[in-house]
Amino acid sequence: MSQPPAEPKQPTRRMRGFEPASGLVADRIRAAGEKRGFAVARLLTAWPEIAGPELAAVTRPVKIGYGREGMGATLTLLTTSAQAPIVQMQLPRLKERVNACYGYNAIARISLTQTAATGFAEGQAQFTPAPKPERPHDPAVVARAAAETADIHDDGLRAALDRLAQNVLSRQKS
Image (cartoon, rainbow, N blue to C red; front, side, top):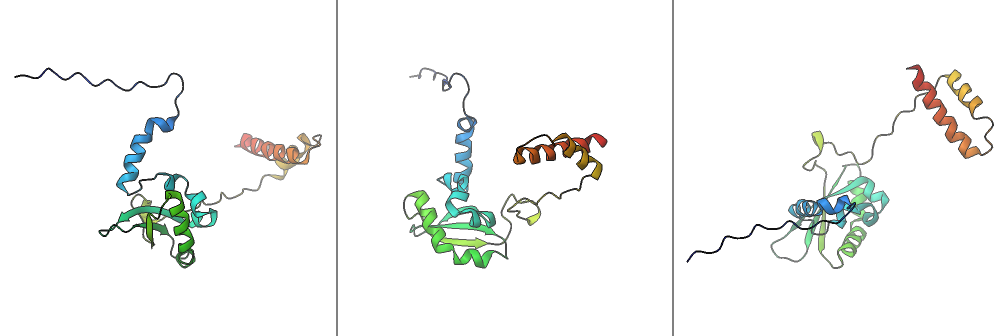
């Protein structure tokens, strides 16, 4: 007997109007995270809140590996060699915070790696952006900007407008 042809699968109906971009890529992000062991993407997206601002500035979660015995997973963190001893001392508290994110004791161990993880260019992991160097403005530009903003009484507003005027006037010369 022959079976009737399968009907084509209807695409899921989307919302009307604007839709959050996160909803459009949520499945792909979840699949990519699960390949690296991150069943809960919140660990990646909210790392600064989970680890704290000091630890988040010098560490990054790389992967979660599940052992054969099944008694908890190992979270691998990327850090620089100079920061590794400081991070090592804070691992018990960090493990508690990560497990609080999961809601149960999912992480049994945390290991540190000081080598480049996949995706970092040339083996260098930059945890904080390098500060932009400040260029000194021409004294004539500074004087003209100060003259333009002299009649503003609010100090904060005057300082902000003064910086803006200096940037605009210095770009006009170039």
